[in-house]
Image 1: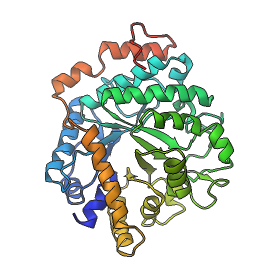
Image 2: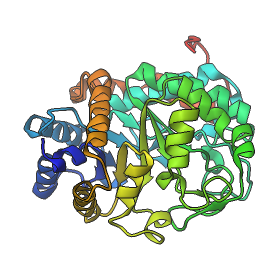
Image 3: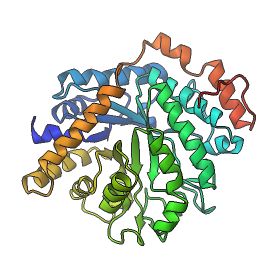
Image 4: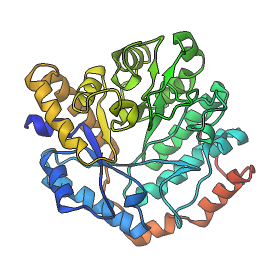
Length: 371
């Protein structure tokens, strides 16, 4: 396997539209790209989404690893909701927290995941388990379960287990916690005062629970915690990724960055150095969402870093094996269902009933306690 193909299995990329262009297909195949992330621009209606996912997965047969591709999406419920009707329109996580019912949290993600998987989406960049501790934080707001870390902790476990039951991979975010910031990392790099005592007492409480609940991935926050690592934001910090997540919290799953083109990164670090530093810090997967010129730049930069000894090939081979092991165990049936079967699941009456009850602050009746 070439260095290029080895590196490619560490990257998820965005694509431009409702179908893949010839250039996108060629780039994914030639570079052995690990997966694709979908946005509203890629999602028109169920059959089109299903066909796009089938098209993406068909590329694996031409790729070096022959491994299924991750197909990810941001579906948290509420305002972070890429899929429009007829998909069930799920309420924000705060509504789950208000109900204080882990059984409902479990069914929320289990049903949401079932709809995603029916059209071929196998990874949800959720749940958001940030603790909402600053009322001026409009970035998170009702995306958070609660202002109480122990309430978020209780729901985090149920949310993760619901995704596991559905067959969709889950991704807890934004490590170690984005609930206090007022700056949007899409626009600028937030700098926080929290020290390790504060993180241990508040932000890390739900993450510890999610990790114990076997969450598949953890997404890093583009935040500089100046009293923990004064030099590097979390995404680029060995202190957070290697020491805290791997050594202290004993997390063995996949670490994925938030979008590396966000201005929190792009305004402060060289574009070709960002992916190198993220990999040095301990990230397994690099996420590039919206700028098509970025993944090629990243690959060339990472290849140079290996050639110059900034990155160790044996480390890349180790994380490569870990990524493939996850795919082998978790993505057993990567191709989407026939659209007729999918349409029996998408927006079904039972799912709409559960969503409406949560939205209106009522306990849905008849839910089995599977948490």
